[in-house]
Length: 230
Picture 1: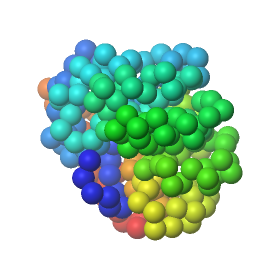
Picture 2: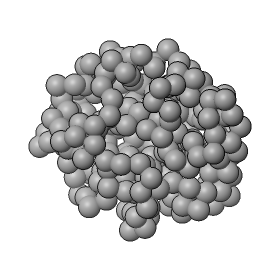
Picture 3: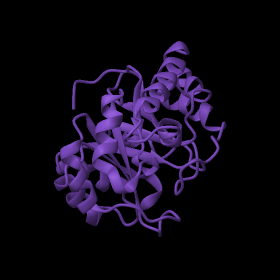
Picture 4: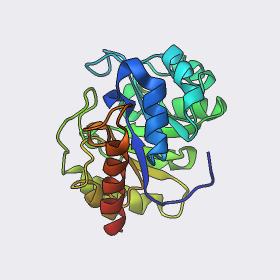
């Protein structure tokens, strides 16, 4: 990963891509201006959906020239960290709620050579985050309940992000927002202090690998709305 900065980064979620064309879809979104590529891993247990495992992550790694941002919505998480690291993840985010020993999980992610992310569900407060700030590179604030794409944005998370931004201070920690990001909600989060915006349906709508220009228009619209709110 490149050096730390707080510029707005758009991270399209491949959960909204054409599953039969992942390689082409990834190349298309990167060519159209994506900064990171967000990979939503779900286990059908911690969240009510089942998506990708390490073999898929490994298969798409060669197509990703930017940052592979792997979000593990799984429990238990520790037994799978090395596999996702070996598959090529740059960032691995685990959930605060996924197990009793999140400190150990974050240690394991960094020990595997990846940037460590901590994901927080909408119903969780920031109490559990304070003593972890010196071990993480990213906090992913869920602005929908994890498990499905295309859900409505939960506005109560705006204040959470403002509080989190104040707690982070000058530490080099990204604030990522995952869920319901559109040109309408992106500015709310950018103003609150977020810098990485995950968007699935809002990026992929209207386009395809044969017609990728709408991806670029969608990415530019989200970025412009977010930057204007800074």
